[in-house]
Image (cartoon, rainbow, N blue to C red; front, side, top):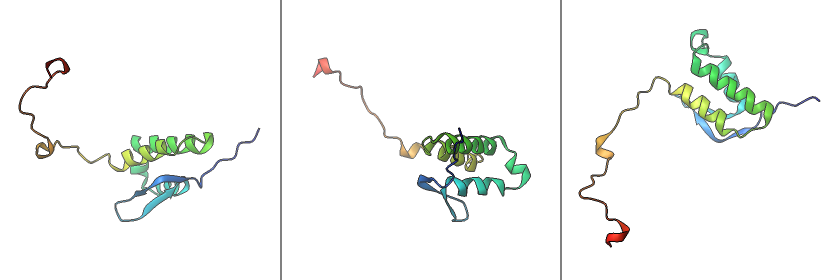
Length: 100
């Protein structure tokens, strides 16, 4: 049984790259990864993203998994910082249903 690989499947939402270009299909993402410099291409996150792309293309799975892999690789140097100004203050205790 010969299985066709569907590289032209679009992502549900295009992936925006730092320089403004967008990755629309699995093929766009694969070409972007293969054109990266070798040191960056060999990074663990990019290898995982490429593995996800291959699995999605070969097994006709949802493209969201490949999108997550590429997004994680793109943002691997971004440090997540807690922003306390976005946290709502909670003054008081929660009311239980039995106390209403």
